[in-house]
Length: 178
Image (tube, rainbow, N blue to C red; front, side):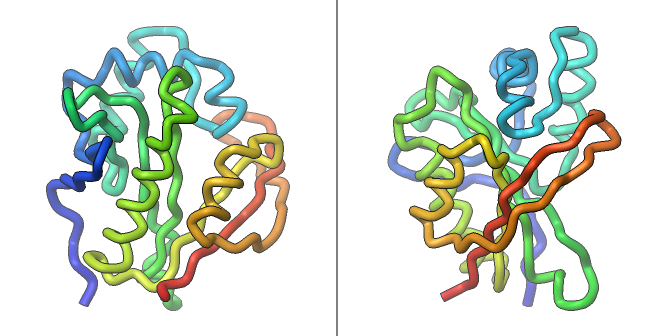
């Protein structure tokens, strides 16, 4: 039985995965106004604070989109998502995992811990059978993190983004429930 997602609250040693809160906007804005985040992950990019507020408002409403926060103070340091891949043809028990950590908090194991929490939640609570993930070909760090968490390389694909314009070379990975 697939469990419906409710209020998110996963607690690790150093991070909490939770729903977005209004207090997270400043951290969110730092993520979206950093052009390299867009280039490395395809995240929305805007230096306009009003546009960033609209983007943030959408993130607060997106089912499967969560805040990665530091455990001691609940400060938002990143985003992690479990996006639906479809609801028919066996895809209802699969999701695509995505994540990004604010630049000054990278290389501290926070993304790895958040991904581990989300993998456990996905397979044990949501009863998913498969997770997918993608990373920009030029962005090696998330590729290494996915492999560390037993994701398997599938293929490389050129992906066009009509909303943002342009295209990216994306490496796709998957993880089956053990």
